[in-house]
Image 1 (cartoon, one colour):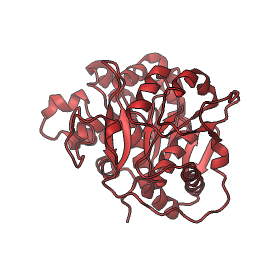
Image 2 (cartoon, rainbow, N blue to C red; image 1 turned 135 degrees about the vertical axis):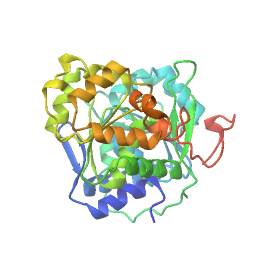
Image 3 (cartoon, helix red, strand yellow; image 1 turned 60 degrees about the horizontal axis):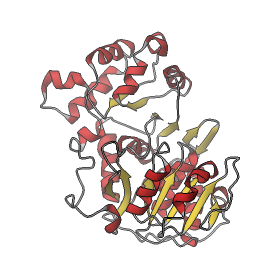
Length: 361
């Protein structure tokens, strides 16, 4: 029975061990390879003292390591806390203190800026560091090499200590109107969200999903969950120019793309080349984070005629009673699906005033 987050990956690895699962730049991993690395990393985290319900931060850019970390923390019965890689050290420190973070997975290049912050985190017991050419220095807490933990020799499989109602993840808000606040998600929240989105977007193992949104954002996290649940392929990407996205859509034969209004505005610009480049594989697009401006929506409909049906079906499935004008706005996506501005409405307990760090899963 698949009731925990990592069970979705495990099931797909059993079904499609040789199928391409995860792509980032020149790295391409099959489901079998992803699962083996996740198992090994989970063993390493357990050896470092990770117990059921312990919080582990993930402060990495979009990468294979970031994705492996999410599922390995789940596999080790921990709680993953994805941190936007653009946050300042003080913001990272606030998140770590607020959730009483026991471990942090990050890159060597980020440790220098975090040095002073790490000394002020009494709950932090270990670091797992991804080597990226920068010197590790002398961190104030014990540090292990990320890749070494992903290559541990064969060990007995870890038992599953968690249950579906256990806390699985804490997603922090951007902090644009104050200090970031944690949204607490159980395993059942995340797996149900993946199932619902997979259903209304008709996602299957044939999909190739381009992930542009950060995993610290609910819609970004849902993309990797739906992909791994269905045995699809997810392609991670960061970009500077909109034309880079269009090139990736073509070269990777992308079938699904989620974005926010600012991203769609970039793609609607003539310089993106979207209108000049046929994209026969792109089956659906979804929007979240705000209403899409009507001129942008019109430009996308004209540029992506073959993607329009999937887009409209998704919107109608989310808001079937809001009428033509609402459907045309395109203001849908994961937040709309799961209750407006309250993502993951299916939480088993109502929100409380208790800080995220004071509730153990």
